[in-house]
View 1 (cartoon, rainbow, N blue to C red):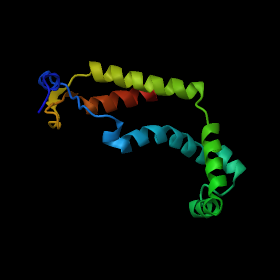
View 2 (cartoon, helix red, strand yellow; view 1 turned 60 degrees about the horizontal axis):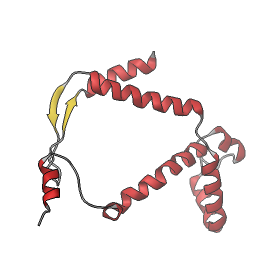
View 3 (cartoon, rainbow, N blue to C red; view 1 turned 180 degrees about the vertical axis):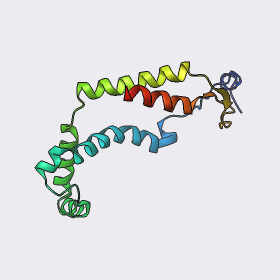
View 4 (cartoon, rainbow, N blue to C red; view 1 turned 90 degrees about the vertical axis):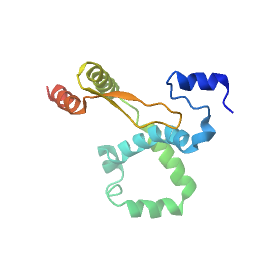
Length: 144
């Protein structure tokens, strides 16, 4: 039996689901792990990694064997290494500019109004189908 409050939310067209983190633990875990993993992968593919540990990044099985022989030490080294890679001002500026340009293009480029599939809550999302124009303009802007 739905509460009146929940039914009103659905009638307004919102896509609200009453649940907490426990409803999707995988997603919550991804939110926690993804930023750290991106920093770690950034280090593994960096010139610093190649200079500090030559050949290790290109030999993942050797790295896995070495890690398996000393799990606590490997975990500590991975954590320390992952946290040692910090975002630069240029990197942050690039990402913010990329997101801002994407937002502006999404709002100003024309396109046909399309609808997505109905969600479990009965919401049918609407969006502007301007993907091709978005790709063309965003590529041109970042080439300029």
